[in-house]
Amino acid sequence: MADPIASAGAAGVAAPPSLARPQLLYLWLVSLFVTCLLIANIVGSKFFSFGSVNLFGTEIFIEHSVGMFCFPVTFLLTDLLNEYYGPKGARRATLIGLAMSMVALAFITLATSAPPAPETRTFVPEAQFDRVLSNSTVMIFASMIAYVVGQLTDIFTFQAAKRLTGGKLLWLRATGSTVISQAVDSLAIMTVIVFSSQLADGSSTGWGFALVAALKGYLIKFSIAVSITPLLYLGRSVVEGVTGLRPLPAESRGRSHA
Image 1 (cartoon, rainbow, N blue to C red):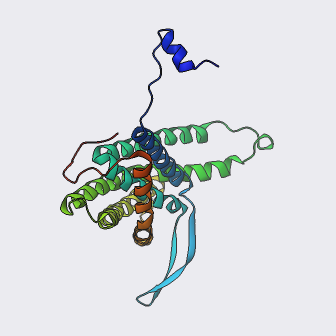
Image 2 (cartoon, rainbow, N blue to C red):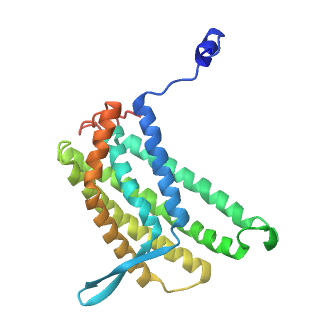
Image 3 (cartoon, rainbow, N blue to C red):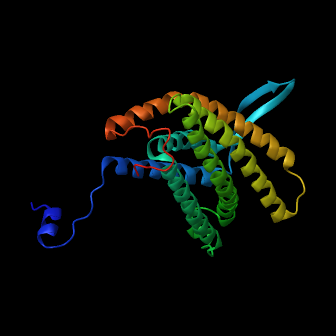
């Protein structure tokens, strides 16, 4: 059987460009990153609970959005992109994630606005469909703002720590950048959600809930950031073993493999 690429070249037609392993890896990492981001936003209106803790004599229930399930992966991917593709490659992934969130928001808005078929000819009642996805649009809108602020903070902090440590102590800069950026992210997303709710129904309440939810989310993210450190080193070994890439030097501020 004839090779289609060789045949195309013989016929004077330009063959499709092939991607090097570092480029293919970047494509897969960004695709996984965007998928986790979109899933977190779409399912994020559901909250889960897994017990309580006693803090200064007060029982606090540990509750947060199920979108939290995706965040450990995004932490890991952001640090790997920053480590091997530099701040430019990590920022590019952030902007792609933002653009795809806007696309998802547009299609969800279109889906909820479309006139429904009779309930006898649809799988999900319109009220239930709209209730779930309308909440998702608020989560996506809030997440887009907090996400960009948090991601850019993470990328900047990671690179600053990398320069200060001379490219060493990966665990320290990865955990430190996550701790700082997710404090910003947690406060930002709950602030946007409260303001969105106030604009929607004129309510003047919700700040207490927002601050408590932000604190709970931050504590969960902090715990996750510490617990996934071994996975970061595993990911580093896989990247270097598959592609031969090495971490960019600490003094690099814009050079990228991507």
